Structures are given as structure tokens and as C-alpha cells.
Length: 383
Image (cartoon, rainbow, N blue to C red; front, side, top):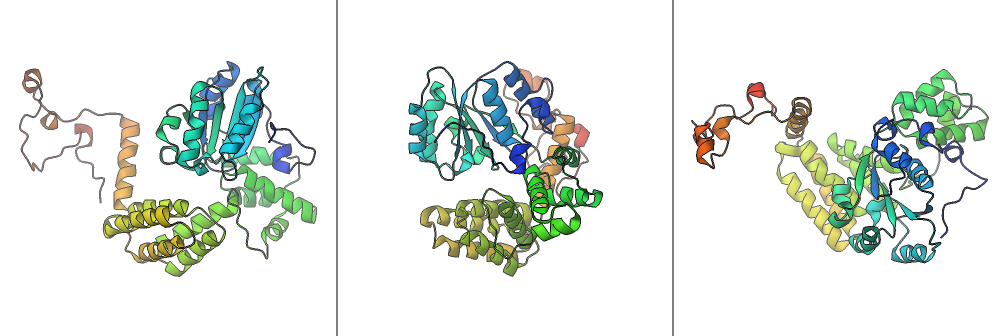
């Protein structure tokens, strides 16, 4: 394994990849003037961080620009295929002159043991780690490693940003093809650029017709880093949500046959049990957690049976999103209104002064009066 080097034969996405923050399109909250990653690049501030966001939003680009700003030796690994030996090898490749930056793509695929191995090198500063993940780092990264990294959240690219990126290819794209690409890409620049490259390479022009032709394939496509991964998990979740057990089992089978991480699938089922089934059938969360645990203990190939059991149960369960919707509504109020004062009657009167100030006054067990802050006392979240 060598430090990252450019090659002559590059796909379109690589050919137009930004080389400076000024060229980056989107993620203004991170790379705009005065924003954290721009400040870090400008001041050459060396620290480890995690880039969390959907595919095709600039994680690799930002990592390379940051490493270049540090004049660092950049090593790129994918956690899907890399292991402890790869970390050892890059550590002995020393120049003593440049800092070492490790860009670890799909860091969530490193298991606890591998993350534990990485920890002391990050802690000592021997390695500056940039992890990229599409999964919530709070669930996927061990606490000691996560505590030594800042987390930056990348958002799906807006249609305006995607439009600019497509224009930057200098490839002629007709207006209706632009609209097709914006809808198809769903905020993923790599997805849009891949389709442009496919249509242009196969048919010599980018139109809705050539894009649709390029999209067609007689082969079962499933790239665990690409759009098929996200399209399939989306179809899987939506099939369960629509109570279409047969469709959900079919998409489960596609993921199983492609070697998808069973814990990735089971984790989505645990989330689904509360988000979509919710109060309609509370035992769904028990079943989903049991499936997750079974996958941890058993592994492939047998745990596919546990997954199928759980999928059939969740798909056929009644659905009720009221708890999920209530949470999101309450979160909106918290974001917009801040931490409103807690009513005095339900504050804890721990001291004499607190009692004198009215803490706990007129409180009675099972009081049916509103416990919400005064500004929200008529609000109903759970409907």
C-alpha cells in the first residue's frame, strides 16, 4: 500500500474532483468562510475527525484537500478490506518529515478489535485519522476513539449544487436530461456523474433516452459502496412500511446474496420497529432486537433465517408512526424555541431557597395539568 497518487486513467468523478476548498460545491456549513473545516485547512490545524454523510457528498474530496493543506503523507484504506496488518505497514513507511494522515473509508466496517488497535496511534498523534462513514458514528465507533475525533456531518447535495457540478463536466446535457439526473441522483454527485459518463461513453450524448438505456442492465448489480446498496436498502424499508412482506423478503435475499453485513440489515430493522411499527405493536422492537442479537451470535449463513423471520414479522405488523412524528415535532420546537423554562411545580425543591422560590409548589402525583413549558402548554405532540 502506497500513499495516494493520481493516475492517468480516471473516471469522470475523479477528473473533475475539486483540488481546493474554493472548488468544493456544497457543504457550506463546513467549508464556507469561517466554517470549521475551512478554518482547519487555512490554519493547518492537525486533528482527527469523522466525516458522516450519504455517498457522493464530498467526504473523500474534503479529506484529500485537508491532507494536502497539512503537506501530509496521505494513506487511503477501505475498512471493508483493510485490517491491522495494513495499519502496521503504513506505520513503518516513515519519512520523519511529514505527518501521516490515514483516510479510512467506511470506518464503521472496522470491528471493535480493529478500532482498539487503531486507538493508541491516534491518541499519540502518530496517525491523524479521517474516517468516512454513512452510518451514525455514535453507534459504530467505539467511545474512546470517537472521543478523540470531531464529527462533521455532510448533507445530501442540493439540486443547485448538483446542477453546478454537472455543468462543471463541460459535457452537453439537455434540459430534460438535467431534470432526470437531479431526480435520479438524490443528492449524490458520484451517482449523477457515473450516469453521465455511462450515457456519453456508450451513446455519445446525454439525453433522457441514453440515460435510461445506460441505466438498464441484465445483470444483478450490488456495489456495497455504490448506489445499488442504497437503492436496495431503501426498497427493503419501503416494502416493509407498505406491509409487502414478499417484496421485503426479496430485497433481503438480494442483500444476503451480495454478502451485505447482517448487522447493517438488522440495525435498520431495529430502527424500523420503533419508527414505523411503533405503538401499534410494541413487541416489534423486542423481535427486532432479538434478530440483531441472533445475527451477532450466529453470523452467516444461518442468521439469514433470523433476518427473514424478523422481516416477515415487521412487514406484517400494524404500523403507527405517532411516537416518531411526536419526537420530530418536539425536536423542532426545541431547535426553534431553545430550552424553555421548566414549570416550577415540577422542579425538584432540593433546598430551602428552591422551596421559597416555588419549586414543587402545588405539585401532586398524577396531576393532569400540563407539565409543558408555559409557551407550549397547549401543544399536543402525540396524536
